Length: 216
Image (tube, rainbow, N blue to C red; front, top):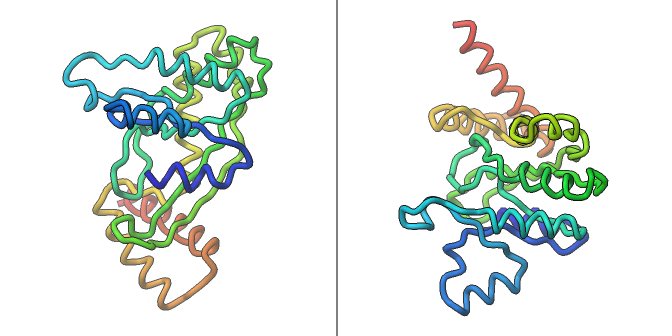
């Protein structure tokens, strides 16, 4: 629950959120989360076996963006501990493209990718690194959308995923994450540097690990 707040407090406008529909159970919770700028979205775990239906949430989100709103979306669609970007859902792209299409691609809408990396997410007061990337302008996908809306959503999602991986410490699996964490500790103790330099150093280290694995 803290991830959206870490990003939202750094934006100079009111931010709305897509939130799990299970949080809206009961009159009070429905009132509370609706009042505090949340739009309910369904996940398979929220619907007891029936088919997920988020068309209403997508329409509401697109209309909100068309009205000039700012919306936080976790594009992975779920929260799992571990320092890696999971394959993204296309929901964020579909919402953004729909909003732009309804306004003739004249909204000037963009996605601002934000990467959050916790040094140890299991521990309170763990060091957190936040990086924001360059905005991804939705109008750049207009031609592809008019030709094939599904392909446009897929391409936008792939571009967003690639950008997010550059903004976090991205490890392939938990085994690699544990190895990188041990190397991080050694480097912090033996060669302390500023946090931005350390972040870049670890990204370079991971790239070297991948290069060695591919050569072996």
